[in-house]
Length: 297
Image: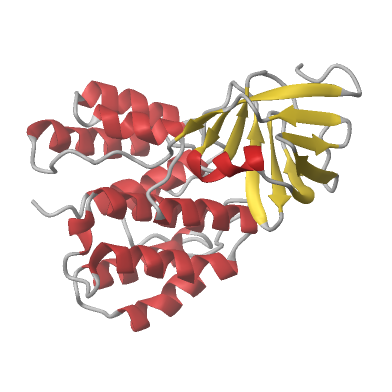
C-alpha cells in the first residue's frame, strides 16, 4: 500500500511529453474516477491519469515511483497544481523529478516483409484465442455478428471498410460511426471507442490503409475521432485524441518494436496488451488488427 497515512507525498517518475508543462504551471480541478492503482483527474478541462508504478506508462498518465493502492484519493476531491506539486486532499504528488516520455509510436516496418506478415497473422490468431469472452474480438472472425454490441459495431466496420476502399464518402460514413460505434459498450472507455482507437493507431502506422480516401489517413483519423468524442466519456475522448496524434501506452510501443523482430515477440506483446483493463486491451487490438489486415501488399 503506497498510502499508509492520511498525509503523504508521492513522487512522479515520468510524464508523457504532452503533460511535461505541468511541472511549471498552475491549474485546478477535480478527481473524476478512482480505481485500485489509478485515478483520473480533470485539470482545467484536461484529462490526466495518475497511476502506480506497476502500471504501464500511458499518453495521458503521470506515473508514480511508488507502487500499490491509491485508495485515499476519492472521486470529487479537489485537485490543485502549483509549484510542481499536485495536491489531492491530503495527498501531494511531486512532479519536479519526473522524466519526460514520448508516447508517439515509432514508425512501423514495411508491411510486406515476411516477419511483419507473419506477425500480423500471429496477432490476430492470439486475439481470437486469448481475448476475454466479453470482448469484441469475434469481429475479427466475422463482420455479420448478432447481439446488442457486436451487431452495431459490425455495421460500423462495414461502413469504415466502405470508406477505406472508396465505395462511400465521409459524409455517408460519419453518421454510422456516430450512431453505431461511438460510445458503444459500458465503462469509461466503451468498447466501440476502443475499437476506433485501434483503427486510428493502425492508420497512424500504415497510412496506406486509407490510400483510396480523399485527404488520406489523416482525414480518416480525424473523421473517426471527431465522430466519437462528442458521444462518449471525457476519459475515452482523451484517449481518442491521443490516438489521433499517434500516441499510445507503452505496451503498444513494445508491440510495434516486436514487428521488426519475430512473431514470437509479437505474440508476447499481444498477450501483454490483452491484460489491459477488463476488455480494453482486447477491444483496441481488435480494431488495430482489423485495420492492419487492410494494409496494401
